[in-house]
Image 1 (tube, helix red, strand yellow):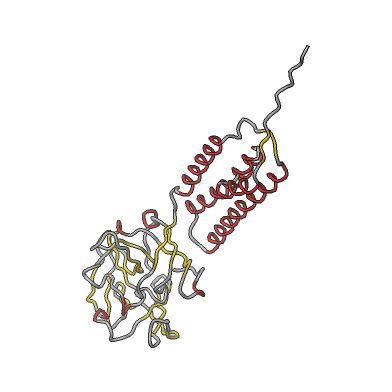
Image 2: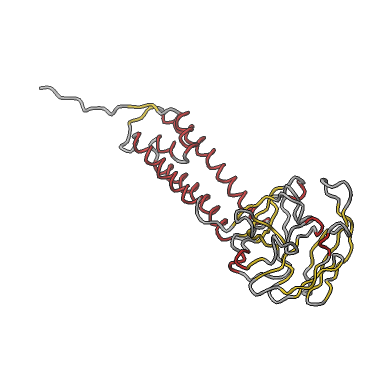
Length: 308
């Protein structure tokens, strides 16, 4: 009488370099390749949670230095998880060596997991965001915004909030709807606005303007006279104005029509704004985003500065 030997499972050696590469490309996939689905699930969920928190922050938080630091911490955590998962997969593969394959250790399973996780991450990263970034190409908003600044703005802010005097606002160009401008709102509907020798008059009263230290940007050959302009409600902001260099220093009194706004650039001598027919009064529907934070600049000291 003969007894047949039980069929032994085929042993397959786990390649550490392949396990590490799989988990670096797709967090958790190397652990799945090693036959450790629980570890794979743990790494994958942690990475997806980090991505989810990033998407949630972009979706609901107001741009600020604090939120940017939080996003940076989440991004670093995501990078750390990716590297950690790759190192873990490499070490575990070396420890496992050769082992019998489980039912889920198949190429088509790895490919399916890769596609599913990639689609999930794509959906998270492409979710609606409350932030939008802009680059500043011109000097029209100096000293608040300089050429080469990159700013985060709250998307659609003026679709949810009433515009106020002093607000920085992004709006679409009347001439080219693909071009955006950023200016400061000076007059709201019903206000009477005039300029005389560069001074702004709002509803018959001259806005207080106090001289401070001259502004000396790198792009300019000489310092520019700088002032602090104060609105009737006490809101204040810096402006630049070189007297006598701009034909728009004087503007006859005009009333801001209903549903429109009067805007000026902070560099009064170098700004196309509501003083020129090409811009004129800005319709409320064209006001979109509100800048909040400089996240990159040619002047490194400006990075992280809030704007108002």
